[in-house]
Length: 318
Image (tube, rainbow, N blue to C red; front, top):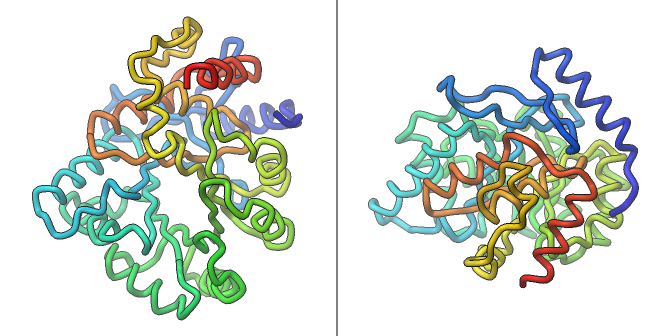
């Protein structure tokens, strides 16, 4: 892993805790600011990550919708997705991410937000994915979510970036959008994304990252940290295949030190312990898995030595 100014990072986390009256925990692990989210007092204290460009904090685990929310008009399946969203919000989650390329996912999110009355609870995150009229597509996306203004819109996989990135910046300047980002996935076009990060004042980038796919640790994550760009992590479980490969394998002994009770939680703790990472967005069809994932955003996180142990163990097992 590239060398970070960890003292600077820890000092910043401590300052947030002091200003916000938040508790700070850590024993041989990274120290992070925690904040209570959700209505129930018995919820765990959820790790909050700071969006560098604004200072706003968001819960350190989000919810993706790729494949899992592409259920068409089947009411039973839509209600199941709404149940996933309900469990996510109740566990303290906020960021939900989608894209025009995810089939019916945007409509299903809009359905769930309506059913739950949860528009004031969501950090709405979507993408523009077209080489054509980005404004028209964004309007369609807004209609599907039934939101007037998105928190974050991203140029998806750099498609039409020369037209769509200026469009998003204009929307932000006009007060129609809060944050602007760019995405890649599967490790593709990393060098192109780095060039954009160097030349544009992005609020967010979204990349593939997990204990097996670690290329972004070499340069992209340090660059995001230095440039003050928040990082969303897609495919934290490799679309579920990583968890499937690890199924039945016993957790390493040190997982208990982190209060990680599953491979999913151990992987998410690995990700959110990185100073540059803001929010992984695992997708699921099961409310119980949402609760499990959100629980990873509480308790202790691994330090650098333990992060390497996690990656090493998983690398051997798969």
